[in-house]
Length: 96
Image 1 (cartoon, one colour):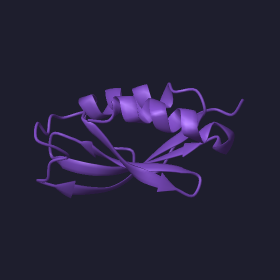
Image 2 (cartoon, rainbow, N blue to C red):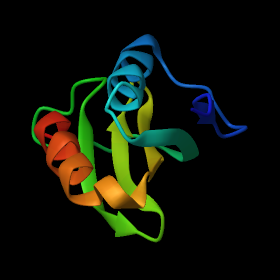
Image 3 (cartoon, helix red, strand yellow):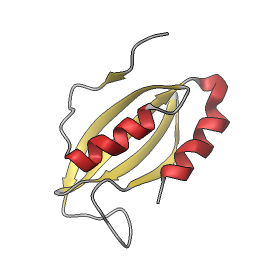
């Protein structure tokens, strides 16, 4: 089994790191990549740091956004395509 990898832009706050660790712990998740950060926006009504919102499916995985203490970060989750439906359900449980 390959080791879990992250993208080169890895900075996030400690609540975000906890959420990313929970995503990485899902069986079938191959990697979590942090994309661009956008300051001052909220992923939902509560907008607490560490909140994750699943946005949709992309080729090879899923995209979502992560609330941080400074704004939001786009997240890409690369998955084992054979387990796509189950992983979507597991990510939906984490999503606000």
